[in-house]
Image 1 (tube, rainbow, N blue to C red):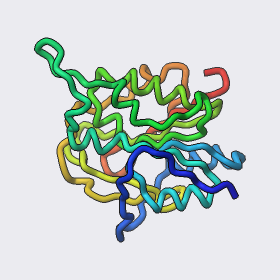
Image 2 (cartoon, one colour; image 1 turned 60 degrees about the vertical axis):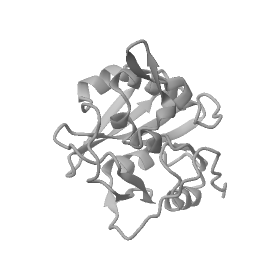
Image 3 (spheres, rainbow, N blue to C red; image 1 turned 180 degrees about the vertical axis):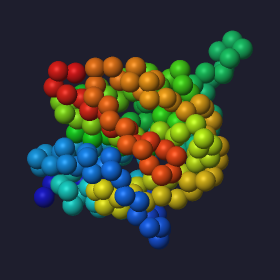
Image 4 (cartoon, rainbow, N blue to C red; image 1 turned 120 degrees about the vertical axis):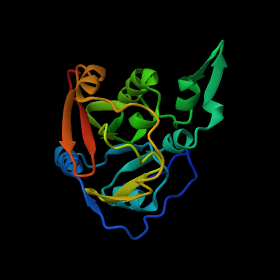
Length: 214
């Protein structure tokens, strides 16, 4: 079995705690689709979770970890700059947090609530950059809040199993930007296949699939 390898990114560790696992129809779909991939290469955009790494190691995965979530939750001033009279987000510096990943090499990217935490005008550049890491039939999996879900900015998510999730801090902190609509997601991922799974927690799980002709 190919062991999971955690790359440099964030040294913050998330404890799985004692919460009941949350079933994910989206992840059921993802792992059914990837069932024939023996050694998937995966990027986790959240904080390092021993539970997630263990689950993915058992699946034979190589895991890159780069915590893009915490700087946005904490409003890290390193990634903001004043330009004339506006304060702008420094996307290039932010993306430098990612480890070196060969283009078109990943089978799965887990983004959690990343797209809910970044300024809307930066989402196209962020998505284009992340999607460039996907190989043919690679998948980006993310959460998107519904407009009526106001709080949850400080939430932490991890894998309890390949198809169940652990979470903490869901109800803390208001999300800073408007929720993306399904139509906006489709426009941002034109040329890709998009599947949306509704949940009971007022969020959507979105799967973006890069087919061979994308």
